[in-house]
Length: 116
Length: 112
Image 1 (cartoon, rainbow over the protein chains, first blue to last red):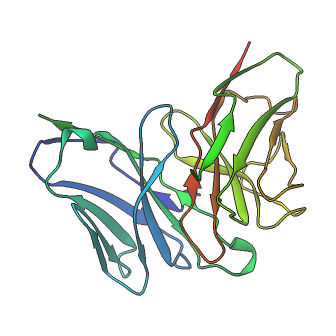
Image 2 (cartoon, rainbow over the protein chains, first blue to last red; image 1 turned 30 degrees about the horizontal axis):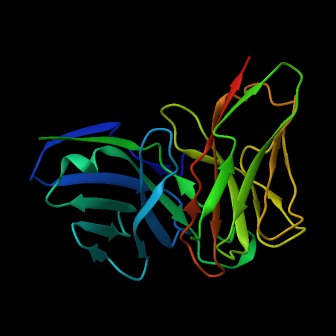
Image 3 (cartoon, rainbow over the protein chains, first blue to last red; image 1 turned 135 degrees about the vertical axis):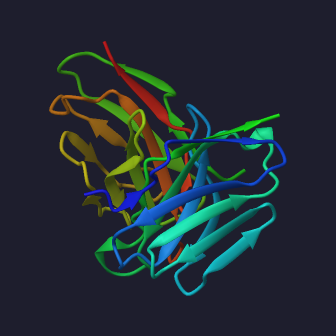
């Protein structure tokens, strides 16, 4: 049962344009969402997160949007740069407490390629 | 310089052999996690530990074992019972009340 899904395996954009990566989830108990960036043969690097009490969080070129009713989140990168080329994973968790403390459920990842 | 270290970077396992992957953190985090990544897939949780001397199975614990004798260390043993061990293994840690997990550089396990 895939609770977090990234339906686009890959995305290609031109340098300077906007990149939009999408993620859907099915478990309504999730209340904290994260995006990670990963290069081949390296560990994921945390990018940005959002709590379910918000619908938008911004950090520099990165903005995450959360639509709870649709169980959908997206990551916007503006402007996109060639160095942004990597695999992007969305992840979801429940708040600390109970037996599910801190567990992250990951999507399959989207390969972003930014062309110069 | 705080962070998470994993060793070795590459590990080769022979048939029927148990191998142990090391994970150390100096972030003073209570919780530590082991994930497995297969090509084209997301990360899947193997085991996690919230405190010393306590750990819980994740989604794919069969064929793996862990220990948590020290706060800084969370080694993962891939046993001979794991029939498909070839994967990229990632260790992570997080602070109490924090949803963000920080990852090590990973260990690639290959079967000879």
